[in-house]
Image (cartoon, rainbow, N blue to C red; front, side, top):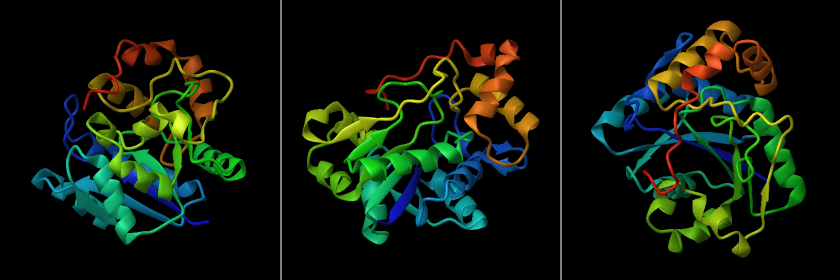
Length: 241
């Protein structure tokens, strides 16, 4: 079974433009996501899916610099971007990542892939019942399922790629992976300046290599002043672009 990782990345962001190419510990946010996804040890290929917008020429240039393939497609129709990648990089399974998660845990990538493979389902996600912080999510989907929803998914489902699957779970074999202890009170995704302040502090402490969420959570548990930095940030609703 071949596994393809796809990272969606673009410079446009309503709350923090250019975030994917900000530098953390000498590397861009995008490069940190690429390194963590590869370190999971389950991917046969990894591709970045960006847009045809001129501003995303910078994303293409960064992909060339760090040695990862990049394909371009529509801005808001991210599902079409993913299917464009599949047209050139066929696989049995797709792992979906977003470029605003620089603290992605390779161990979780590996675990999600192993559980998905053992379960033999259509789709696995770590966010149906959230016990992980935002910014650590992993999704795994069978390639034929991703292709099949192209004729079904409309509006915001095309932006969020997999949301049609888990909101129509009666039509697919869907499982959620939950972890203990519950760390869902933490916010480790990058969408605002307050998120940036927290993530920058974490990277400054742990250094260049990807780190496990358990290590990050244990460190933050003793530093409540850091988790308060972005505790009031509201996550966008599913229907928001």
